[in-house]
Length: 186
Image 1 (cartoon, rainbow, N blue to C red):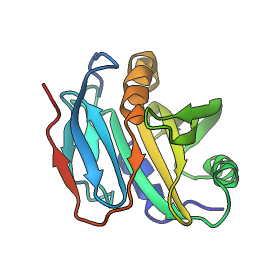
Image 2 (image 1 turned 180 degrees about the horizontal axis):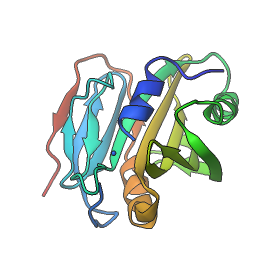
Image 3 (image 1 turned 135 degrees about the vertical axis):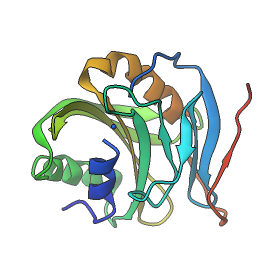
Image 4 (image 1 turned 90 degrees about the vertical axis):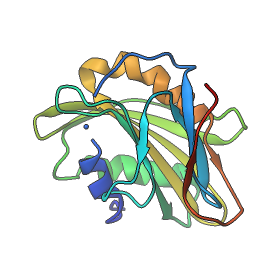
């Protein structure tokens, strides 16, 4: 399997910042009604990106990189485990990802009980050494969700609990509507 045309530019373009935060600090709800929702880390900007169909959450840029959370939805007719395996295989052959190393893979369960897989890799994009955490989930029909949290490798310990806390709030949805962002509680 190869990444879709939508996924590769998102991974490349959004692979950019680093501010401390507490894992429990969550802010705006990022959603595409009928598709998904999750709570972004508190203080992060949630905005459109030309590289993503859906809104992206960005931390404040630092060292020419903004840690971010982005999402891709693809149709894949096989079970989630097959989708994860295909992506693991494909990720190593993406030309702009150098020095790819899979460092962790384990089950991940959201607060709402949605079961998925959490895959952590390190790689180099250009001159940036990144750690990327992929959260894979299955939705209705053949829908597969890949939510990616990207940060610089040196900041991975700081961001890992932030990405996990945000993804604990992830849910797929069945109603149809337009993209939105709503403020979270202060």
